[in-house]
Length: 156
Image (cartoon, rainbow, N blue to C red; front, side):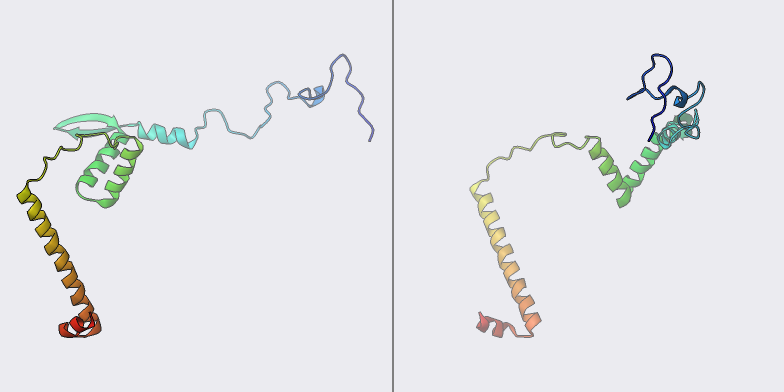
């Protein structure tokens, strides 16, 4: 393959030094059909819309607030009314912002030691609860097997 003649003068062609005849002409872009000046991307459009002032009536007075504030207020209101989706989205946002940290709020409440009567009452309660759960488990077994309580007693 024959080499082209060297350019005239002391100009050297190499890395980062394209030949003079292939360089962009003044006023010519390397991407002539690229993005035009002043064309905004999706992020700038979304930001502009979220910060756009919206008129609201609050306490009988008209106020202009950013659209994102209105959206957030509506989300809080829907969550307070019990909408699970609104609450879930709001909780995720609040957690992402770092507003739901462990150390927020009062610390654990110090508990006084139990008296002997209170401890006895708790032991009695748990014993009854355990006996009740065992009895209900036996009832389930007898209902499943179609056996009588006496037969269940013999099987033990």
